[in-house]
Image (cartoon, rainbow, N blue to C red):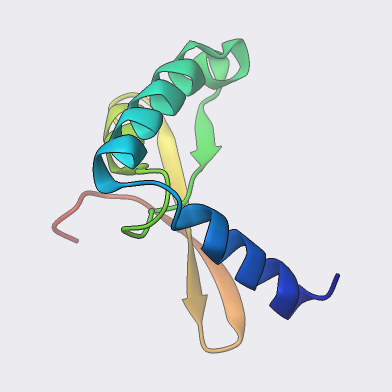
Length: 90
């Protein structure tokens, strides 16, 4: 399977969930992630800032940022950079 086909398949899978279902799934996933020993002991964590049709990671980022350094990937032209999360308003 090539990258384009895989992206299409993932997009179709994501469309199967309503906004409410996605929110419920997101809460379950966030709860599980926050209980992981490696997450608890980590000082720095790489997370992504979710889009509307993805598992919502905004709460996860905010919770982790209270006592950990949180890095988010950012596309800058053709480069992928990691930037420290400093708050929603930034």
